[in-house]
Length: 68
View (cartoon, helix red, strand yellow):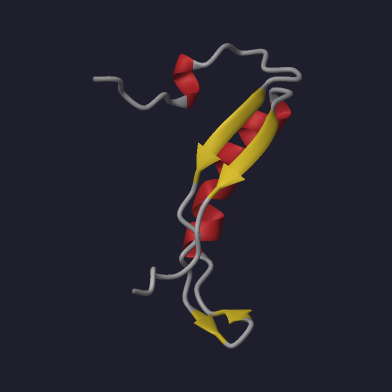
C-alpha cells in the first residue's frame, strides 16, 4: 500500500511541476463569512513552501457534507 508523500519526500526544486494537495476546507460559516479560519491558516505554510520551491500548486477539496 502506498503512503502519503510529505514535503520532505519531494525534491527541493519543483519549478514548473504541478503538485496536487488535498486540503480540508470545511470551515464554519455564518452566511458568506468564515467564522473560524484555523484550517485555512493550517494549510498556508504547505502551499507557500511549495510555491516558494517553484511548484504550480493545485488544491483539491470539497465544501460541506454530501446530501442524500
